[in-house]
Every structure is written in structure tokens, then in C-alpha cells.
Image (tube, rainbow, N blue to C red; front, top):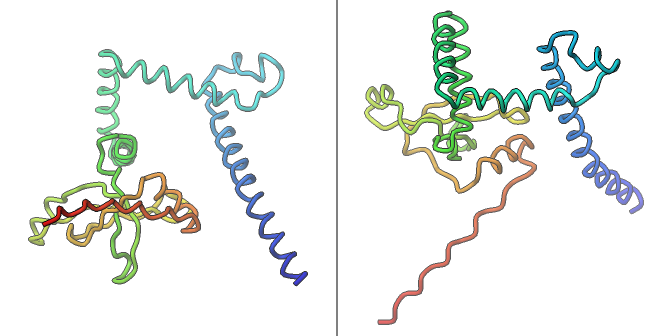
Amino acid sequence: MRKWSVRRYLVAGVLVWLPILATIWVVSFMLHLMDQTLLLLPPAYRPERLVGFALPGLGAVFALAMLLLTGLLVTNLIGRRLIVYGEELLNRIPVVRSVYGGVKSFTESVFSQSSSFRKVVMVEYPRAGAWSVGFLTAEDVPEVSQKTGAPHVAVYISAALNATSGYLVIVPKSQVIELDMSVDAALKMIITCGVVVPPAPAAKPQMAKPAA
């Protein structure tokens, strides 16, 4: 009985500290990554040169300011033209255009409010009887649908622990089951390897049938 109590206390302690330590590690990594944006400043204007020591987290403020200024720039006519010219230049470079185009399409799919990436679906993958949760990225793949004679859709299946990597599968539309699960809930379940499972949606109340 005492051994079981010790094990229960250890598990309870792990459940408390593991999310905290993981959060601290992720936040520290992101702050360190954002601090690298300070390298864009001239050496004479970097915090180490001005105050004599590094200021952790200042890169996050600088990165946020850069994002706001970029957003202001690309929302006006001149900024949009500069972006178009820059994309045309990148699209002329063989390897760069493939990487840039893929990342841009993925980013637009994730952050666009009207994108079909907002739909969470379930498909039989990697074998029959084994279901995977994925995100609908294209409601129709015309060439595949034409060659197979049946409507096909594209589904992105994220890898566990790392939602930024995964697989793209093209499956018949009839074999895709759309879920009421939100994207945030699906990502949380994928990242935690199924430890955190969202509850089933509440059943919709049925309308009472009128008396005969």
C-alpha cells in the first residue's frame, strides 16, 4: 500500500511539473530564437553595445515591431507592389521558388480564416481499420478525380509531437469523415500523442414530434 502511495505521489508530481518545465523550455527557446532578430540591427545599435550586456526578451519586442511594420507596409499600394516584385524575383530561382511557394501556401492555408484547413477530418490511414485525424486542405483534386472517376480530397495528417511535419494523403471524398472537433483541440490531441482527448460534442436535442 505504501509503495502504491509513493508511486501515486510521483505520478502526481510529474503531472504538475512536466507541463510547467515544457512550457518554460518552449518559451525560452522562442525568446532565444527571437533574440536572433537583433542581429539585423547594425552592431553599434545592438543592446550589448548600448547598455553593455544582453537583454533577454528584447528580441521578442523587436520581432513584434518588425511584424507590425511589415503588416503596415504590405497593406498599402506601394508595399503590395514591392511584395509582388519580390515574389516574382524569388519565383525565377529554381530551388528557392519551390521552398518559398510551399511555405507560403502552407502559411496561407493555416492562417486564412476561409481556408479548408480549418476542417478537421478522420480518414483510414495508414491501413484499413486504423483511423488518423487530419486537416482537409483541398476539397477537390481535379486530376486525381478525373483519372479515378470519383471525387478525391487532400488531407494533411500531422505527425505526433511535431504538428509542423506530417503527410499529405489523397483519398476518396466518400471515405473522409468530418469531425466537429476544433483545430486547436485536434492539434492538442496530436501533440500530446492522444493523452489529451477532447470530449464528444453535446448531442443536439431532438424536436418533439407533434401529437397525432
